[in-house]
Image (cartoon, rainbow, N blue to C red):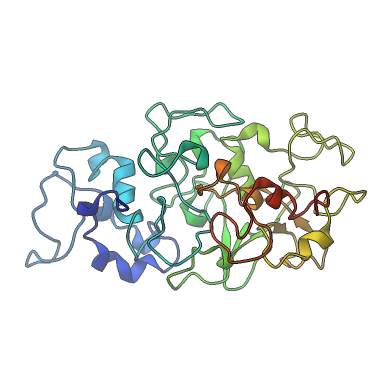
Length: 335
């Protein structure tokens, strides 16, 4: 069974014209009735004659006037629909999702990424949700950021409720890159604008980007600059944890990572570039969270991307079959 709640999938005609125009649930697409119901008793649509589609609802009232519990409500549109990003397990749409897929009981295994409903403590941190992981722990349902601007994919300004890095706003440019922003989308229209080959990552500052800081909101110990006590790498070696910023591919030499090796792959994992040139011509390619992991998850343990550099790209990688293939994207040992 692919679709989680088929009965909640009746708003396609209402949302389809808007869902492919950038990030939804913000600005003119912040439509209250998509998610809220005033009296838990709706019997017809919003047109004067009673016509019009609307999302079905759980007859038991929910807090905040929601039509259902948060995860079930989100999945009513974001699972099994071809007019909205499908974020759970197998993809209904044709794109290779940049973020991959979430899992939950009955729809995948815990070790493969973020598990909806999980009460586990975030690896590398202390945060957990006693009620179980919810979509809104990472995404701001109203697209709001107190620091201003429209965050990329409505990512939360306070991931997991832990405001670990004040000033977070994962911002983005569309069509024409802006190196001061964290993410560059080639286009925000068309059915595949969530695809991995449409999304690129800038490196606006020495820490990397607010994208990196966002992940650090929950996975705190895995993030830092070279020389930080939790990271190591004070002299460019002696790393305690893999760098997520401040260390470019090939910068150390001496048999560590190699820019030439990375450039030699037909398929390459995503990295950050301060210059906006991901060919490596400016020697500024920096691996980070998205280089090794899918943000939502995939069908590999730890949501790792087994990218050997050849074959057809999928959310799991390409022809790669093991973590070694991922390491050899950048490292000379084993190549």
